[in-house]
Amino acid sequence: MAKQQIPVIVVAGFLGSGKTTLLNHLLATAGGTRIGVLVNDFGSINVDAMTVASQVDSTISLSNGCLCCAVDPSDMDDMLTRLAKPSANIDVIVIEASGLAEPRSMVKLVVASTQPRIAYGGLVLVVDAAEFTATSARHPEIAKHLRLADLVVLNKTDRATDLPAVRAAITPGTPVVETTLGRVDPALLFDPRPRTPTIGQLSFEDLVEDHGDHVHALYDSVEFTSTTPLHPREFLRFLSARPAGLYRVKGFVDFGTDDRYALHTVGDHLSLDRTPWPRGVPRATRLVLIGTGLSEPALTTGLSACATTEPPDPRALLDVTRYLRP
Ligand SMILES: Nc1nc2c(ncn2[C@@H]2O[C@H](COP(=O)(O)OP(=O)(O)OP(=O)(O)O)[C@@H](O)[C@H]2O)c(=O)[nH]1
Image (cartoon, rainbow, N blue to C red; front, side, top):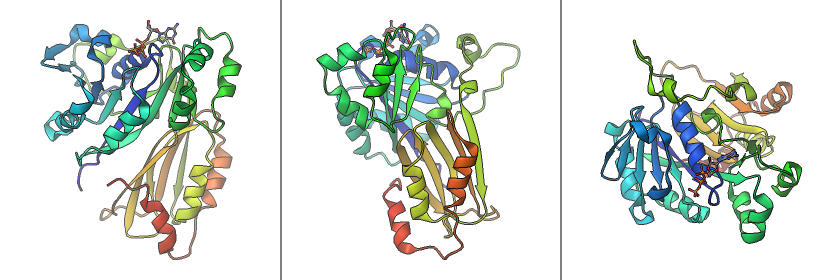
């Protein structure tokens, strides 16, 4: 089976909101995951890890296998091609949009990429909770950015003086993760690889790992398995009404056809990959749902209600095709 496409996640947010801090956190806690990083504005990057990085041209190779590249929007496609090369063995690409970049145009650049090995993986918007009122007054377009975002990282909650007002300004239903120092669990954005084993010495991750907060403990995860196929339309309806605290859903879906649908969501962003069921793999839907304040019975009931013994409805399957990655 062909290697799955590499998800490309765009991280945007106004100047100083904490994008680089978030990126540093992802690099430090991603375990064995190889992250390709594209930064719009190389001058401003302050990756602590650079003390252990070797710089080659505009690409920084970090010892944990991460790559950082400076990128001008006109070079975006070239850089994506470079990171997507099988020899780079990259699992996920994160683009840090400069604080001045318009998120929509960054997303468009990724979606318009001609590189077949990558697929747009969602827009993460970092918002400075402490400066929110002042930023909104100066940049009313933040409201539009908030609507576009698949996941909002409400950062600097330690400095926010009126968090309830900031929360209230975000469109209900938008998935929001509240953080300090951009400490988002990488599992909300991509599937981290298991940590690389090390013998006799500390790995890079051990050296830079943040021992302060155990972010994993903040999230619930619910598993769902069904050997009865799901009805595509019902399943899409379930997803579109999912609770805002459900940040991530991943796994495989059986719609009762000969294809297996790999599902990937980041916040509101949903994508599906369709491949034939591999021989010998039992047909079943297996999902992991990650978030905060999840009600396992409600999610299980909602998903179970999508199960159907009817033959697959081709028209309902058409609804699914708009989420298929090319
Ligand atoms: N108090 C506090 N400071 C933070 C937090 N997150 C980031 N900072 C600080 O805020 C400043 C800006 O953070 P950056 O990560 O550089 O922000 P950025 O969005 O990358 O900034 P630009 O690249 O200029 O757009 C830095 O001094 C960070 O240390 C937080 O949660 N709380």
